Length: 300
Length: 300
Image (tube, rainbow over all chains, first blue to last red; front, side):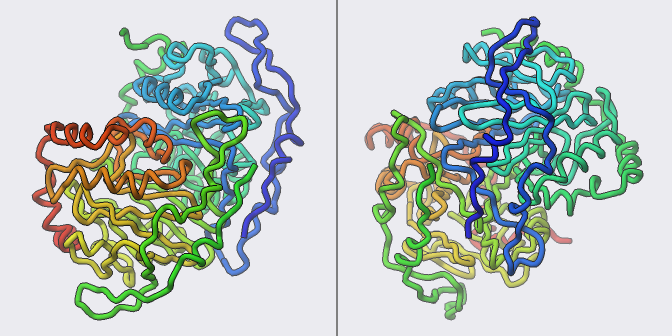
């Protein structure tokens, strides 16, 4: 049994416009298209059909298409997941949440695979590690950094909800999901059935909300209105995990997330009483990440 | 562009027989079928077609089918990858290379997903960590441990080249690839385009061959005759990585593996001069793994 592919969806929903946003204020012609805000309700419900003899739990997988490259990478120190995605026809690639210390590894891989890196995209301004965007831009001339306008960080391209980050015929669709930080974005690729949640939804957890404009009510509302409304079998790829879990799904987190399955009131109470230590790298990470990581690139 | 699926292949090639091998010598009726030895040349070459406008490098992805569940897991201490695979229709699952310290995490996940664990399968008798097979058997009654006969380790089911490890309509096809250890197996699922190489092929590396019946010539020969002859776009899922790389492909390792792309003579020379330290956990791991990990299960 194979679910129908949804190649047509992207082109139907997409409204191609060039993006007018750069750090210098000039208009840069980048293949990031701006569209009217999407809601997850746009995504086809037939993908939520269950196998007939499957009473509960896991749903049919939405396979990656054969022209879509996906590679998850890990930074052991910060437990960060980085994602290299590409169009296997055009060889255009993007990288989500690269880590400074892994920039050379990532650049080597991109080179080995024959890809052209278009964008280094951050889900938010990280507090626990320095982004690899800045160094990757130096290692791979021509690539551009991307982050949300609301993050307050510098980048070549600033995005907001509804914008699309295009690579070949594929694109990330952007949703603003503030809560962990003010500038948190969640990226969805409907055709591939996957969502990159940054620190907004972690596997059986979520990002802390006790610094950097954190707001637990906002996080809860955004998760429930913009992420948990996605089809149950969309795979969740978060920015971190500390227990060796690499991915999850909408259904799993709607069912088992020990925080986000609670009522708003209970959730806010949980988040207010986590008593977490001060992030050990925050004083170094935030100033660097405000400058797209360029602040602290190793001298060689 | 989508490559044709190959559902028919498994049923055509498979010769269903029940496996007559258990630790007690009695015949256990398990859904592991024994077939005449397969060679990778059985796998269809049309999967190796490239995109016409793709001169070199990455090939079209072979998508996982929608009824195939795949979840990679990580043990931070030993840098081991564990794989949970399942048939989403029958809910039958297997786990490859579980780690003792992660057995409760893995059992919880299997429970959450509503799967029935049939087999805990090891690629070989590990020297760097204790297998989770034994503890998983206690946590999930009814599951059975599987390892190669050649490993010399105890398990409920012993396999050899050509045997199939069945879960629902899916199956691992087993290839004997001794070299890192005498009992190393490589498991292939042709329809899903993936191969689980254990320590035989690592990402840009390979398992050491200086202890536990290691033999670098044997490793080299087996990689070149049984793994590198698989279609270029099969994804490689190894037992370990120490640099945060999660997967590779046949094409990548045939092209970039710094050891296995060399001549046999150069390879043997490289392996003889690695000067690696004595594995720190070997004295604890091997006695435990000979007993399927049951030797050292935490008391609770």
